[in-house]
Length: 262
Ligand code: HEM
Image (cartoon, rainbow, N blue to C red; front, side, top):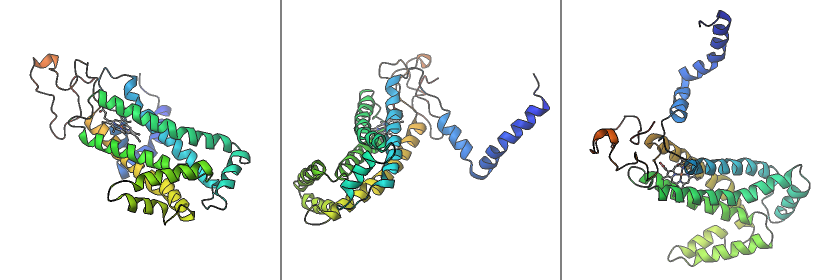
């Protein structure tokens, strides 16, 4: 059925900003490339663990920004500012609780996601680089947890950091330098808190965001792997190719397909 003139006019008005943006940036095309892609027909809930990890990270970023509005990173007022968030700020207890427990959720999900990619053999060619990026994300995620733990500046935070830094100090060669770098001096004190705050708020989250961007770019470029038991997973003959490996290796520039993707 032909569209009415009124509807055509409405569509043109609605699409004008999209066309404007596309013509000047190509962003709409990139978004479509990112979102509308082929995935294997037999993917399952296991493949949602990466997206779940991403969601947990976004929750951490958003709640972290809210906490930063009220947190004071100096030893004289850090503890009191955290008490203020928990007891006085509207819904502060909820935001702090989400950030605190969300940190564990984020780390646990990362381990589950890593276990999934390992068990599905998704670390193998051509996804080795994405595995390496994942390992860096895991290390940075744990460092984010370690630096955040000191910020409430209570006894648990202080002594846990003493133990953590002393453990680092026992590493061969680099250990003592690393410990002194983290402490920002000879003891754990105001400089340590300032350094941990900067690492926790700026450097580590920035690096995690950049690496997540790269990680997702590679996921889209290489496609998602089928489960190892799938009739269409890499290394198994495609039914229609009569046992030959033809078609399993992609020519550069051709769209991602894991053999048998739908
Ligand atoms: C901030 C942490 C991370 C985020 C947000 C993240 C996100 C994702 C997403 C959304 C996918 C695609 C969907 C899926 O396969 O679940 C993916 C795939 C992948 N991730 Fe992660 N990931 C993270 C950490 C890791 C870690 C720690 C590893 C391993 C050391 C890893 C290795 C991989 C690999 C190899 C793939 C490709 C899987 C495939 O093609 O089937 N990722 N990641």
